[in-house]
Image (cartoon, rainbow, N blue to C red; front, top):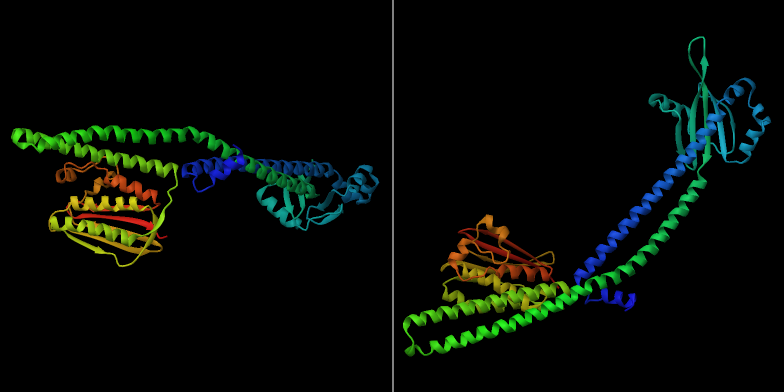
Length: 440
């Protein structure tokens, strides 16, 4: 399979989010490495070239230091007679300036001179004791030193003046410009090649995982078949025996009822576990093709299903579904989401309590709120409510046969729909569960 074909599959709609995340993570790491390496190389070369330039200027001003006394006594014409000085300035690369101890210009040779005032430079250097001084102005780099002579009579040094050398930074700027272009072209080429290789490597790395997922799908299907079959047989056998009550003893009827309820519990638990597995597989390795659906219609249908239960339990069930909100989602799973939340609300409410189902729109986010005045959840237990099989003592005493998977499944469905679920509750006061979904 070619890299182009793989890249087309990877960026198609069937490409799974984990594969995208793995690819993007790999790309970001490699881009960061190359970017940091390129920046480090540029900084190193830039610093090295500047240090080399400063060293050249320092060598030049040190070599010119003895000439300051000559210029002060004989003038600058003697410099023109010396071959070394004529050759130096004929290259039109360096420039030199000689100043007396008061900062007055005595002579200069060369073509390019900075406009930086020497007195300001000297003042800063004296305050900081910072000789030699290196400065940059436009495309000129300068080095300034102070020249002293030994005074044997006073046993100290006498300031004779200052020498400033200048050199154009054009060569360095051109070199750095070429380096930047080279790094940009090389970086772009490297990113393209890394992207193509990342696509291929990601595809190869996830191939075993994809086989594992297919195996998991097959395993869950086998479990569903092989476990349901014996449970169904047990159910049929107990139903047959319970239909012949005249042939069995009363204590045996009670035992058969216990067996029948246990079988139903196992079947219910199996269904919820398989549903959780299917959610994890679909959310991780396959993009769900959601459809536009009326959220209010979905909630209205569910509320009608719970009306008889509300009447039977003497619970005040109210709905506030005034607006028609349209969302993108899987109708079956959204129905399962709100069914689980409503079932919890009814299970953990007492006669006379109130359950309210309402919707509200805020900045393109629709919030579905299910609030009850039931037994509630202690505040310290709220961090655990989405854990598999976790149930509070209040919940167990109210409904001993529950499994603690209702909110786990609800959270998985909400995450699959890129939504958010928020739970607030207080023991003895009630619970409020809010689900936030984006409008279509």
